[in-house]
Each structure stands twice: as structure tokens, then as C-alpha cells.
Length: 448
Image (cartoon, rainbow, N blue to C red; front, side, top):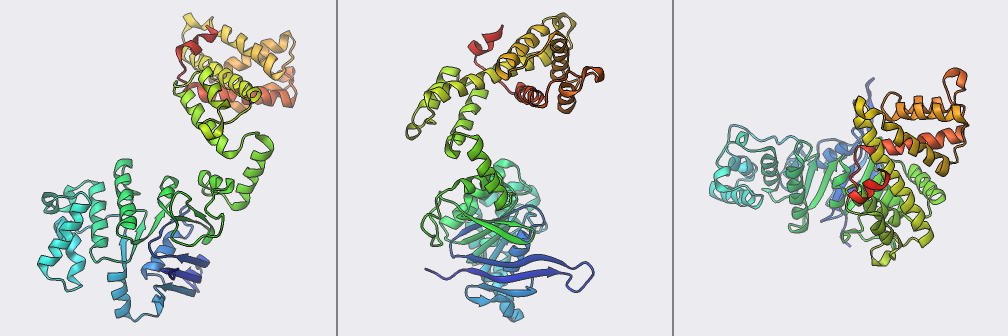
């Protein structure tokens, strides 16, 4: 196996060392990045990911430890050697495009070749070839950068970073200033550079949706490398241990909660184990199925069929008894959520206000049957008013829950804590869904 292209050995980066505002940005970082890998440095602002990137660029001298690139300690270089390293081994793309506004797009790309002593005709040919590759035609290449869109300017910046044919391409939040479509085009360009040009790509981002581009994701926090997650959907460059590329539940949770500490992910895994009968993969499919329900694509019959269909045939693999219970609970929630939506729409219309009580009556019946709410006449009346106020937006969730538990002398209903929490939790789910439900007509008519 090839030696690492980049190796950080117990590397420490300290800003303002010896001063009152001294700050340790990287704390004994150990990193191995191999040739042709696509690595994403991921984490919140201030976690140290950009510091690591700029140390690889050659711009931040380690306070301790070493940074080895292609087998050499780059911070042992002479100034001339560092200059050569930054010109020919490393290319970088910044969040800001950093194009020179007074010269043409093509001259911006060709500029680094001047310092390599390349003849003008060869510089122009190389620059134009790269621009065309990234969707910038001859006519646009003659314009000033200010004529271009943000996405076009960033693709020009990518072409400029590649003009000297570096082995390693760095990118610091390269799509942070772009709209989603332009960002996707630029990210696809980095993928192409990695796969077709066989370049090592090291990219910084705080946006989790770009993580699938990488071979491996380095999760950083508080100046530390917290964990490394292998992308099982990509053929790995670094030799992995047996089973390392299997997506464990912890790795899947890491993608959903990218800023969580490993111990927090383990807690979520245990909670899932003790509260759910479905596995993580099954829950993922169930979420997609419920999304189709919310969009109005799936009725209760089709929903049930997908639940009981075997997992290896595209279903979720739930037994019939559990599938019936899940289907019933989901569609009860959806139907009452639609009622909540209608209630909120008509609550200000006097002519329709009388009819609101029909929904509240149905909801109270549901609470009695499903949640085991036992209430006397006074409690039912007070509950009906409290529900109407919460659904109508006159009470917030905390105020509603408090009303459930307070004694009548304080304007409450005097339910015990468990029943109060059950009522509040169910009602909040209905309210949360109410603005987004699009159910098939036959389901919407269930309570009319």
C-alpha cells in the first residue's frame, strides 16, 4: 500500500503562543490521508478544520509535532522549497473566489503558470482547456470575472487551482457562497477531479449533505479529531480492517447527528434499542414511507402492505399484528392532524366557529379510548376549552401542559402527570403535522 500523502503526527497548532490570548486550535492531531483519497474535514465553526487545512497548505507552523507531505516534513523546507511546494504540489480553492477583477477569466487561470516560466501560448492553451472542461466557453473566458455568476466564478477558481497540475487539491468551504444548484455543480467538479484526475482532495465543510462525496469523513470538534467514518458506498483507497466499511448503527447515527460525541451516539443507540421494535434500517424505510403518506402518495392499505412486505423485497418486514397497530396509529394521527389544520383555519370565522366543537368532541373521544383519559363532566368541559385554546394558538405547549396538571382552583384540570403528558404529547404531534398534511380524499372524508 502507498505511503500517506499527508501525515500529521501529534501536531499542535497554537495561535498567539505566549500571549494572554493564546489559543490551541489543534491538539495533538494524528491524521493519515492517502493518495487519491477524497477526505472531508467536517465540524462546526471553530473546531479546527480550516486550521488543519492551512497547515497542509504550508501556512501554519506546528507548535509541536510534525506534518509530513509525500514523506517530507514541509516545515523543514527552505523558503524556496516551500514556494515550490505551494506552487506545484498543492492547489487551493477558497470560499471567496479571489479572482483578479481587472484581468480576464482566462488570464486569472493562466496566471500561476507565469511563475512556472511557461510560454504565453502554452499558458493560454492550458487555461482554456481547463475552463472548457468546467463549462466556461471561449467567449466567457474573455470576460472580466465580475460578469460571471457566483457558480461560474467558483468553477474558474477550481480551474486556476488545477492549472499547475498539483497532486493535492485543498478546498475551504468552496460552496459556502453559492446557491444549491451551483453548489452541486462545483461539488461534482471536485468528485470528477478526484475520480478521473486521481487527485487527492481535502475539503472543509460544515454542511452534512456533502459528506457522501468523501471516501472518509474526519469529524472534528474543539481542536480534536473525534472520529473517522468510512463511506461504504465508495471503494476505499486506504486499506480497511475487516468489517470497517459496514455501516453500523453508530455510523448511521453519526450521519444524522454529525456534531454529536461518540458517547451521545451510543446513548441514542441504546434508547432506540429499548424503545423500538424496529431496526435502524427498518426505521429508515418507515420514515420514507411516512413521507409518502404526508405527500398524499400512500393510503392506509398501501401503507400496511409496505409494512408487512419482507425487507429483502423492498418492504419493512413488520409482522401483521404490529403492522396493523402502526397503520392505525399513523392514520389516526394524520386524520386528527388534518382536523387541527381545519380548526386553525376556521377559528376566526364566526359562522364556522360553532362547528369546531365537533372536532374537539371527536378528539376527546379519542383521548378517552386511546389514552385512557377518565374525566368527570367538569374536567371534560375544562379539557375541551384547553384543547381549543391550544389548537387555536391561544396557549403554548408549556401552558397547556401546566393547565392539565394544575388544580381547578388555579384554573387547571387536575389530571395526573402521566395522563397530562400523554394528552400533551399526542396533541403536540397533531399540531406539528397540521400544516403539512396532504391526505388522499378518501382519508380526509373519514371524520366529516
